[in-house]
Image (cartoon, rainbow, N blue to C red; front, side, top):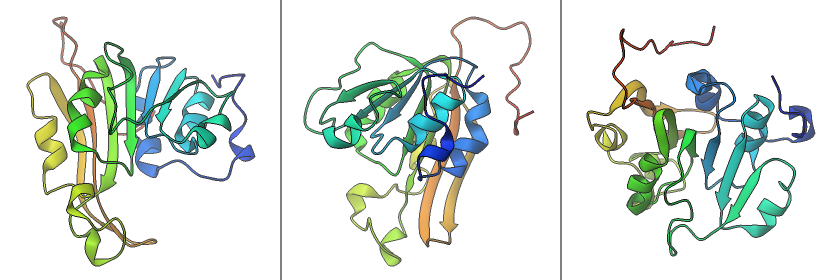
Length: 194
């Protein structure tokens, strides 16, 4: 059920990441979702239209000002100041086209048990086709897998390769933080929306 206070998708031009669209069905209906480095809010709009309360964090106050009616917005320099969401957890955490390695533990801790991490950003090799090109902003082979390798994480999907139009090297993961409660039967994580 779409969120009534979010503008319809047709009112903004940026389309959400196909990776997010593909794996968003893993996020429990109606649960809160955090978009890290949300920028212009393309994912906030889309997720709000899917019925999720959304929180976006970004350092660009002007970009956040245009999102005032979409959800909770936090202006913060997450690379040079304390993590502004300490102790808060979300049913979904989305990160796209953003990498600041020191934040990865906070990002993972922001996923509630049973929640989903959907992460996609540039990978090594991108320096041969464009920006970003600095190693600081490119994931090393297997880096997202290693970050989610703890026993309380279940990898549902992972890709590390090349995409065209535009040409880019990416690494992406959809992972579920396992619930702390014992389950009578194995959880089923559908590989496509039903």
